[in-house]
Length: 113
Length: 109
Image (cartoon, rainbow over all chains, first blue to last red; front, side, top):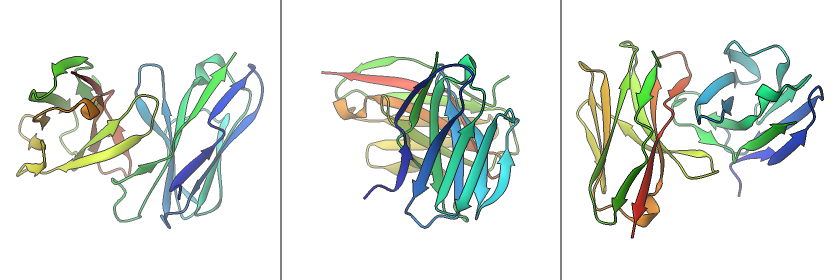
């Protein structure tokens, strides 16, 4: 039983393309997140949603647009991909009252050529 | 200055050794502290919370020094399976976690 799942696991694409990454959690959590882990291994918060409502948007370029159709899903759409977008993107979820106990998905390794 | 700083390592230790990692944080308003573990090419997972009084979970002991803004993790009797990157994590109360870049541990037979 996968708790937090992401698709695809690997994504290789050309500069300028538009791509989406999907995330689903079956833990019944109210809060979901997107993180970016770059080549230096820093894991940085990008977005946080609570019950489909945007809570945190950490100075991410507006080429990145999260979409939460319901509280179990938080998808990430990226327009006009750039070389610097290459990274591993992790989705995570947490209970609303224990937001510091986060459960991460397996990650999506994005490579922009 | 980074919000959370860690020595990247790697720390190469033999099985059975005791190893300690340190972490410093810059925001004195930080409220909660954690250690997460990340295996190579895997997702981070919560290892343990860090309390002011210190806490222990089996071979792992975490301590917090608020005055010095310093967090530590001690691993006793290292196992091969402890090899991973250990991420120091701070909650500054913004409903988001700030992660350090991690300290890599390699336990050798």
